[in-house]
Image 1 (spheres, chains in turn yellow, orange):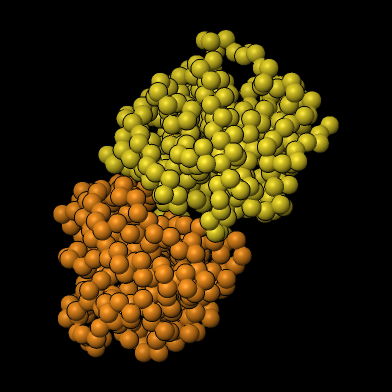
Image 2 (cartoon, rainbow over the protein chains, first blue to last red):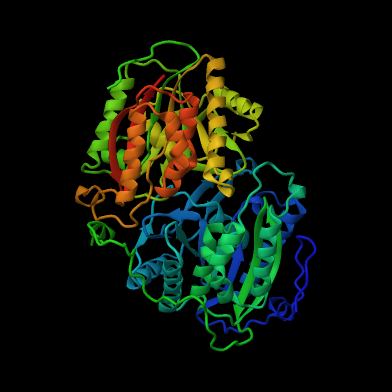
Length: 340
Length: 299
């Protein structure tokens, strides 16, 4: 069924991949609302700021370009981006500034240059997302402050997928304490809001797979995955994603995190799978898989309409409502956790 | 209160301070640089910073060197190397509390010297030369609270997290080497330096806050385990047992979810060559559940 790649340049040959999005005909009517696709993209700035320096970085850039062209076909009303590089502590932050603008320099790769941005936010969707999250028990926070720092992951996605700023976006933070249950509920809330507002949306998870960077400078042309073990795990996940089995990958997140230096526990895929309906019935295509400064950088598209796998059993439970942190001891801390 | 003020020896560390950076403290002070306004809050810690500033007021120093957890890097230890930064710092985690207009100068020569000394000890270092770079809020807050006049140049050092791939012990060895490099560079430069380790002790936050952030009826340490660990560390500091602090740091870091994981405190104690003089604890208090202490060491 699968046996591919002998380099970091990815060539999927599984049956599922061969019949997947490369030849995908959109199954959605243009007036259909809901999430019409999900993307997984890396958040490091090399493909945006220096694609010419490395063949690997260039291939990732080309895959972003392919996704951009597919967005032109999909015609979404909003791009909903969850970035592992926007951490939050107090609940889940949703960007609600109608027009964030400014410059950003990556904290690690500052020598690559500056990212200038001036993009539209879909404020009605952002507000609907906040309301939907609250309805599901989440602590949601509206962010609308001049000069608020937009993170590299969100910007790389926006500047490469939506460079003309035609499509408004919604940006979602990655709560550093949120584990699977809370993140799934956050994903479901994104879906609720899309349906409430009757929008066509694309969900974008800005995340690496494995996230072990080189700890010494490497020549860009020599960049690859920093660990063979991480590489093997990444490829296993991509094999499953190419078959459209997103929820199966989400179910593997904990194990992957233990084994392969996952980016933020791979929680972005918990969010993505929940947003897209917690299903394995997608058509998946891996457009690129490369080393970005040692991390596993994959560009993946998932569209509904793949092989139906019926009702299957999963190891981990589904969650509809978040009930807050559950302290072992009931103490005064309970008051603080729910001060309302 | 420690009154052994250092007024002169060239090429020395005047004092080292554990100087945590909760934005809540700046918010509660209402300085003109910060846009949000508060009524009050976190007085024990703010008054502790007042005691620190009083203690430092008779000192003569040329530069403030700060090691910050909120500039996290993996490919080496990075240092600011642009002479002047000016801008608006909005805290990405607490934007409703901290929107601060900063205007600071950098001692680029000393930054370069620390980087070079680090390289000579086998560390990977990098100088940050992009003038559009946004200075992190850990640097800004610790500097503001320790020396709000902003009339001294600073050196800001990132927290290198590469050792997270191995263990906290390995990370600690990196930070000890960086501390030695910092001390050597200071001595060769002839500068008189104030060192700031910009970190909390225990660091588990509450994930919600009250309607009024400065409503102190909701403020307390996250759990008793953290509190016990914080007290244990402070007891050792007050006894001048900094080598024991270093020895127990990996366990403390892991078990108290401590921000010392960033290496700030280890760097500070190593730069001061593991002082045996008792430290002065100016204050201890919690901020949104995390444990914070303002601690001063004299050489």
